[in-house]
Amino acid sequence: QVQLVESGGGVVQPGRSLRLSCAASGFTFSNYGLHWVRQAPGKGLEWVAVIPYDGSDEYYADSVKGRFTVSRDNSKNTLYLQMNSLTYDDTAVYYCAKDVTNFWSGFGYWGLGTLVTVSS
Amino acid sequence: QSALTQPASVSGSPGQSITISCTGTSSDVGIYNLVSWYQQHPGKAPKLMLFEVSQRPSGVSNRFSGSKSGNTASLTISGLQAEDEAYYYCCSYAGSGNLFGGGTKLTVL
Image 1 (cartoon, rainbow over the protein chains, first blue to last red):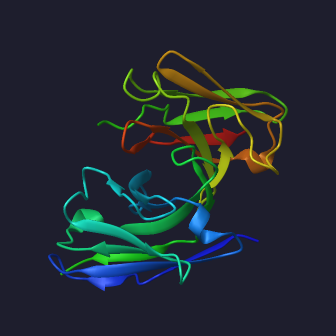
Image 2 (tube, one colour; image 1 turned 135 degrees about the vertical axis):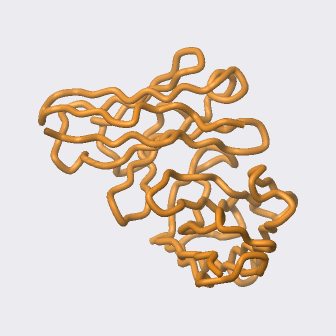
């Protein structure tokens, strides 16, 4: 079955960096686009970034553009999110999610998330 | 880009039907048939309920249906059950990115 397992979350000071990982199994990783979606405590969902199946491009929400970088290693079935210049507003649970079919059709499977807390 | 607009809460009794609206603009919901809906129980990861406006993933009950008219998409749940009580989020492609709605809390009375 499809499994997505995020890791790398933790407490980080404002202005510092953090890299999240998402290990995937149960499907042909190199065939699907992958997204990061976050949820601040007690708030709604916010789409963060997406990378297509071959890593040929990247798209970002305006709120993270220029600070976050999404990447993938198809040989390791792993998705990454490099987060730089973190601010308090970046505090959230970060989920990785797999395309349901086409690139922008929706998020078919989700991981359990990893919590990032930006605090001084 | 602003978030899509959903009602903060809706409620219904077991067996009834409810509809949750999701209003966007002519730059997102109105122009793309790429609206999806997610159910989230407290402390859990979201679950895909509908994609491409009205397509149900395997395993999702046919009590869940979707539609779109103009800039507004809708999720209808028929035959409400206690386990349907959750938050529901819509999401639409908006040209090089996705937008979520603010979420709707469904209470089953």
